[in-house]
Length: 146
Image (cartoon, rainbow, N blue to C red; front, side, top):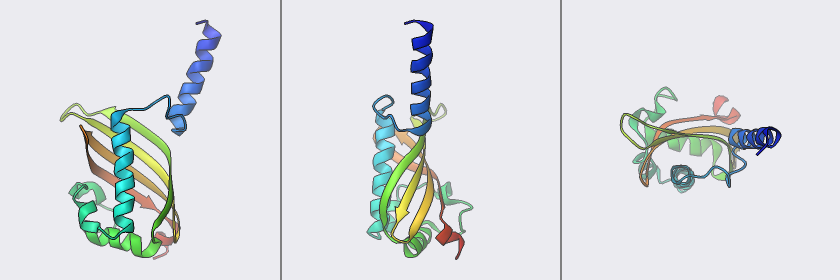
């Protein structure tokens, strides 16, 4: 491949990685596991299955968010934003975790809830087919107004 073609391909791949729009180029079992975990997270909150969702969340994942425990936090978000209507991943990064194996998958979403828009940041620790949420942050005007 000549230098010009290599440059063009490199720019396309970099753009796809930056926007997460070209999943056919970058796909991995850990990314799929994390994406499915986000879907289960949203479905669990929509159905008010907070205890089930909290079982997949590390205790420190919500640290500094509101001071509420996991169940109370999810209920608060659900009460103020309503059900998740649509989520779109806008960024992701998959990195190996050396100290305890698996991968760390960071994902940013723009999410439309019944009660407004939000930006969500998830960080999952993936080991095999198991996903544990290690960090979560949500930014929504409706939550800031409370």
